[in-house]
Length: 202
Image 1 (cartoon, rainbow, N blue to C red):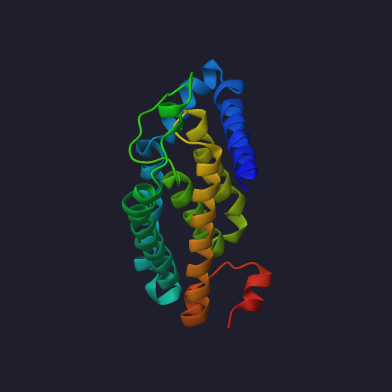
Image 2: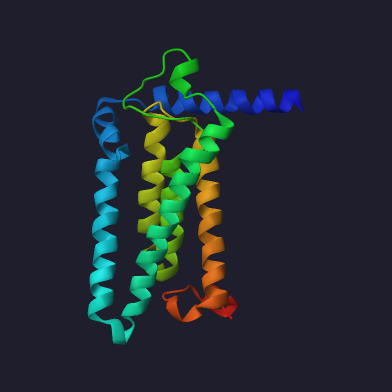
């Protein structure tokens, strides 16, 4: 078991350097630190959620409730996940950031708290799952944005790839559990489901 864990840790470190050093270039060094900050992607979600609420209120009697529910689910989910990540998981696991224990890491942005899991990955994976359920045709856009934000974290030297995978797994699982609850209790508020999901809904 120890040898397996050592191998996984070595692969994790190798993957980090492959991203942080191997893909390093002047263009990414200028762009990635901007994308990774909440000041870049948070306004996108704030505008999107506000748009859902406004449009939902305007069309309340004609399907608008679904949009309001979508916005509410994202808001509540992010509040719970973000606090759980920062206050519980990071504190309990206590993994140091890569730049704290590894030499020659290109640290391009600031960070706080433990390394595992990545809240960026967790939150954005959750949002991608929820938005894909309501707006299935745009699923590649939601996941593309989420994956881009996830990629910036090891590139900027503040997370191991395993932090990203762990955070994405938690966020995705939370998203699907949320959808399962909604399909079981309030299926009328889900829209834009893929054919297989519609067949599974009660």
